[in-house]
Length: 85
Image (cartoon, rainbow, N blue to C red; front, top):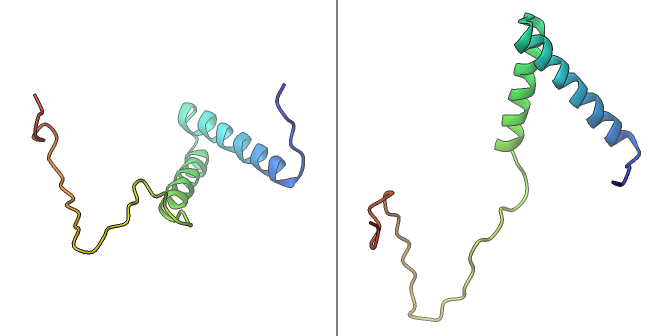
């Protein structure tokens, strides 16, 4: 069994999920315009949250360079990189 979380955050998430499912059901499947607007609002919030994500981005590669060393970053179009068949 999973861990049951308690508190306001879980209840708010539950209500938000229920509202989103109701908007999908009534907006997309039944075509009610006010629920389509609610669903559009959810989409706008999701895109905004992704675009405005705060905090540092993950570091994928890190290396210290000694004096005189350099790094070359190259981007090849798909299928044109050396060794591609």
